[in-house]
Length: 290
Image 1: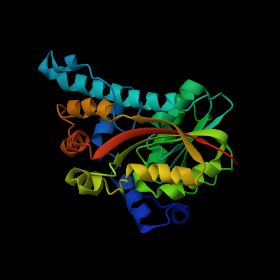
Image 2: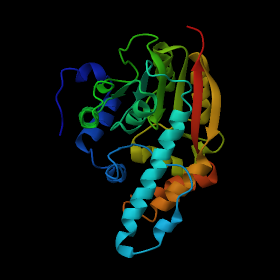
Image 3: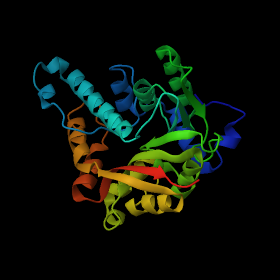
């Protein structure tokens, strides 16, 4: 499924970016958990879940148990996206939002449905762009929700054009100072950026074999918690809310271990969260100045 696009050379500027894009272009169904969960209601996410699961899904007929687990996992990942959108603040139908690293578009569609505004998603995966834009057409919102083959470090959108921006488990693939510099440029004064991410504990994370395993498995660069705040401070982004979601995500991972869709990543995630070396954070920050 390798795709040739004359824009590829300008969007993918490093060998690392090319390798990340190639993975998602050529292995679109590798993350079969999110693919299968998206089939529940046609809302496809690329992130994990939060909240207390309904453990009654583990009871009842054996032949339908896995289906019940899938539906419950999907409910928890949608609850995570809802929480992110709760922190975007006052968004009105005439506003413009951006989804940085938009995947198959799930959160973008939820934002448009909630706020009625224009949403633009950017991703370096051409496969994801095509999938998400087809979903927009299927949902009848292609005039309001659009997905672009662009690099979120250099989006080419107008300066000050965004009321809100979010990233959902995508910041571990980029340099935070470069990313927040671009987001600060894009946001209007007083605009809001919301991030949900896994990050390492500055004290113990560097010594955790589980954090190292997660980093290697996903081919990412897990940042220490402090780096998010240093990069925000350097780019006129002032945190207004920080929520530690670690305890809220552990039940999701525990339920995943009961699913036939379990991939083996569950154990290192649970170990890292429980030992405190890895944290799941939501950070909401306002753009100050111009």
